[in-house]
Image (cartoon, rainbow, N blue to C red; front, side, top):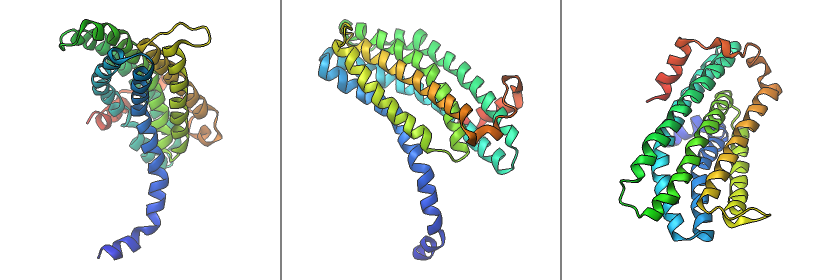
Length: 250
């Protein structure tokens, strides 16, 4: 029976893997950024600052998951509209997703700045660890804003079957994060050693660049011109916002 099922669906396995593997890699990129931050700080800045990075990442990942979850609601709606040949709807959905992600990223940043930074004081950590953790968390919190913009474009392209581009941008983003992280933490090319603040700044720069490059790819690529003919932020409508949130929130 299993052999028959394998034979029947064998042609689809490769197609699914070609689409899915880049998505897995690009999602893994979000986690690898924080892993790289820890390795860089542990190697160049010592154990106290490494403890600060570990503390912040454990808190930040909980908040990051909320943002990523909301952004996922766009992909199936894009695929559905594209399958129905309602190409203009894809552009309208992207516009609504950009607004949702931006507003939600501001809320998440406020959550980081207003709640998480206060919570750190009551987790039983040493004053030195807390002192290093707060500025790093603040950088990561601000980086949610460009990350959520990146996610809107990423989920749009993936809903249309273009998954490799976001993967490549994520890979290069991680490379840039490591290079800048080492430069800032260690202090190179005339820059004073920044310690744990350096990996926070490098992560912020990395995510800003990722959002810019992903946006430029979407708006300049011939692959998406027919979907963006009616792209306007004026097409923000409650029913589209509700559809995206209803799919993404769970």
